Amino acid sequence: MRKLARLLLFRFTSADYRALGPRDAGIGVVCAWIAGIGRYWDHPTAGLAQKSGLGSVVYVFALSALLWLLLLPLRSNRQKYLTILANVSLTSPLAWLYALPVERGFDVGTAISMNLWFLAIVAFWRVCLLGRFLFRGANCDPARTLVLTLLPLCGILGLLTALNLEHAVFELMASSRREHAVEAVNDANYGFVWLLTILALYALVPLALAYLWMVVRSLTGKEPRTPWRPR
Image (tube, rainbow, N blue to C red; front, side, top):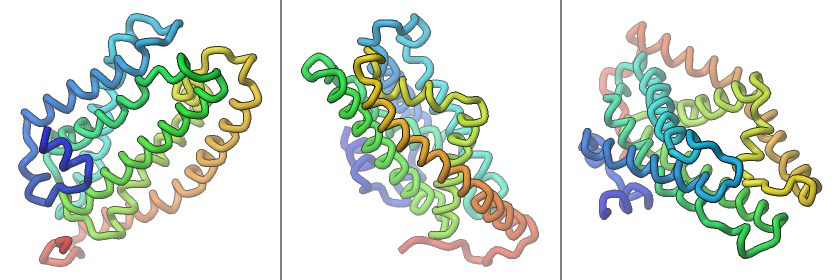
């Protein structure tokens, strides 16, 4: 618990990240499973597969694999898959905030707005934790940290848009229960989410080009002989 608190409060050092191992990854996967169960525990139309929490478990494995693949061509920043999985999954307790049954104590419109604020806070916190891992754990310089933090996020948003799933994701994260009663609230909030998606799509191309440039420099041996280390 002390280790988990230190990670979530940005107290981890480079040595702490390097020390993450299979046991930490296992605990993190359990945390992700609990978060998945909490997300759907009071959802009236959720199926058994959703209430099982396995979706969140699959998510942490998939995101960890994506980050591992992104770091693989960057020779000075490569990380073990289990180290990445441990770091990603151990941020899952933040998502337990979604399990709070706010719709039972507030009207539907207020509950939706609160859930969206929970989403925004948790998402921003986890993005910052990912950036710290890349900066401290993977020894990425500030430019690489920025690119490797934003590229997968923008790519995921782009994929959701291509598959026309962003509205479904929004409805899920907002925990909308009575659509007709809160249509105006949903429209306003969804407009903000759509704006973020458009910005992500515009940022995707320059981020991808920056990443390719970093990969070419790494594969052609143009990186500094001494890997960059944060102070």
